[in-house]
Amino acid sequence: MPFIKRGAATSVPDSDADNPAAHVERLNSADAEIRWAAARALGGQADAVPALAAALGAEKVQRVREAIMTALMRVGNEASVMALLPYIRSQDAGQRATAIEALQALPSAIMPFMPALLADAESDVRILATELARNMEANDATHVLCKLIDSEPHPNVCAAAIDVLAEVGTRDAIPTLKACAERFAGTPFLPFAVSTTIARISDTQG
Amino acid sequence: MAPLEAHGARAIHVTQEDIRRLCEFLYRRTGMSFDDNKRYYIDRRVTERMAATGSESFQSYFATLRSDADHEIQHLVNAFTVNETYFYREDHQLRCMTSSLLQDIVRRKKNQDPIRIWSIPCSTGEEPYSIAMWLMENWADVDSHNIEIVGSDIDTRALKAAADGIYGARALMRLSPAVVDRYFERLEKDEVRIDPGLRDSVQFTRANLIDRSDMARYRNFDIVFCRNVLIYFDDASRRIAAENLYDCLRPGGYICLGHSETMSRISPLFSVCRFPEAIVYQRPEADRDGK
Amino acid sequence: MESEKTRSMPRARILVVDDSSLVRLYFRTALEKGGFEVEQAINGIEALEKILAQAFDLVVVDVNMPRMDGFSFIRELRATAGAVAGLPALVITTEAGRQDREDARTAGANFYLVKPVSEADLLRYAAILAGVRA
Image (cartoon, rainbow over all chains, first blue to last red; front, side):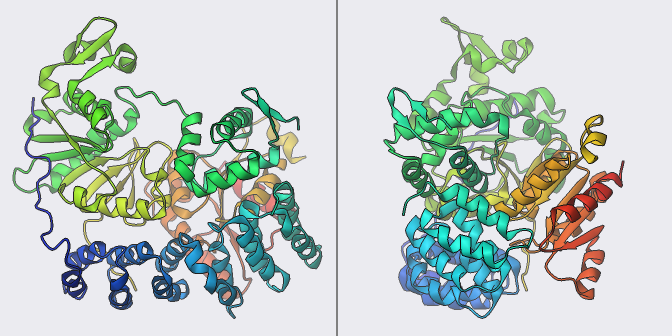
C-alpha cells in the first residue's frame, strides 16, 4: 500500500509559548506570518489589549486582522470592547462583520455601551447595534431594544430591532411593538414584522 | 394547539409559534432548516429535550438552548439526526477528492512531499479508513505517490477502538462485497476487522481542535476532513479552531465540512470552491490585503 | 390566476437571500402564496453554495447584508463558471436614486425593487423574472 506513516506531528512547538512580551514585539514584524502567530499567541491576554488594538489599526493583511480581532474577543473586557467598537464603522464590510460577531459574543461587556450605540447619529450604526443584543439575556435585550424602537424614526432600524426581538424578546415588548406598527401603519413590511413577532413572544414572560 | 406530553411528565405547553421561533434560531445558528412536514417530528424531539433538561416551560428551554448550556444545541440536533457512523459516509466528498482535489494538489506539489490527509475528529476511525480504501479503489495514481493519512480525536477510547479496527456489520452498509472482501476479515458475532495492512496505513493521534499548542504540532496537510463539529463550537472556539485548521493546511490546501455545514457560519478565512461533486473550502494560496 | 397556471407545471424555484429572518419570512409567505417554491439563505456565501447545489429560476437578494452585500453577491454569481452565472437576480435596494440603478445594473442584477417592497410588486416581478429562463 502506498500509505506511509511518519510522525504525524511534524513541527516543533513555539519555544516562546509563555512569553507574551516576545509576542507583543512580533506584532510589529514585517512578516505577516509572524504577526499572525503573535496575534494568535496573545489571545485572551488582557495586558496585550493596547498592543493588539494598535496592531489592528495598522494591519493590512485580512487574515491577520481576523486573528487580532479573535484575540481581542477572547479577552472580552471593557478595554477589548473599546478596541473593537470603532470597526463597526469600518468601510470594509468584512471588518464590520467580524467586529459585530466579536462584540455579539460579549453581551455583558457590551451592555454599558449600548445606550450610546442605539442613539448613534448614523442609522447604519444603530442597525448594527441591534445585533449586539442577540446573545443578551431576554429581559436585557427586550429593554434596550424597546427603548430604541420607542423613539426611532427610521423604519429600517425598527425592522432590525424587531428581528432581534422575534428571537430574544419577552412579552414586555408588546406595547412598544404595537405602537411601532401604528406609527408605520399602511407600509407593507413593518406591520407584518410586528404581528409575527408578537405571535412569537406573547407566551414569553419577562 | 394541544399541549404535548413528554414521557409521562405533566404536559408541557409548546405552541406552533414556539417551534417556529426555535427553528428560526437553529437555522441562524447552524444552517439546518426543517420544512413544514418535519414539524411534528421536531415537536417530539423538543419536548424530549425539555424533559431531559428539566425545563418547566418552553421559555426556560429556549433560554437554555440560546445560551447553549451544556452543549444543548448539539444534544437537540443529535436528537434529530441519525448518528450512525459507517464507511464511505458522504462519499460525494471522497469522490471530489479523487476526481478533483488530488489533481490540483499534485500539480502544485514540489519535490516528493507526501500527500497528507487528515480526518479530525476521526471518532472510531470509519472516516480515515474510508479515505484509505477509497484511494486504493478509485485513484488511478494511488501507487505513484506517498500518502499519509492521519486520524485524530479528543476521545482516547474512540482512538483505541479506531486502532483496533473492529466494527459491526452495519458499518459496511455502503461497501460493495468486493471491497469488504479486500479490506476486512470476518470475525464472530457479525463483526468485522480491518486488515492489518490497512490498519497500519493510518496513524491515530489525540488532538483537540481548540487547543492551539496541540494543533501547532500538525502542519502541511493537503486535505482536512473536519465534519460536523465546528458548527457546534461557541463563537470564540469556532474562530480559534478555524485559525488552527488554517495553520495546519498548506497554502491551497482543502477543508471539507459536514453535509449541512457552511463556512459562512464558521469563519471568513477560507475560500469557497465548487467542484462537480461537492463544495469544499480552501486556504488561499496567498494572503489577501484589505483596504 | 397565477397559482392555477403553475399548478399544472413544476413550480418555479426562488432563492430568497436576506440576513433578516422576518424579511425572509415576509418574502417567502408572499411568494408561496403566488405559487412559487421558496428556499432561503442568510448570506451571500450560503446563497452561492445553495445555487451551486440546486436549480433555481430566480434569486431575490437584499443589498444590505453583512460581509457580502447584494451587489458583491451578484458579481460573484455572474463570475461563476457554468449556467448558474446567468441566474436572474432581483435585488432589493434601499434607495431609488440613479446611482443605485447604475450600481444594480453594473453588478449584473436583472431588476431592482426599493424597500419597503409590497407583496404585489414582489409577485409581479418575480413572475416575470423567474419566467425569463424558461
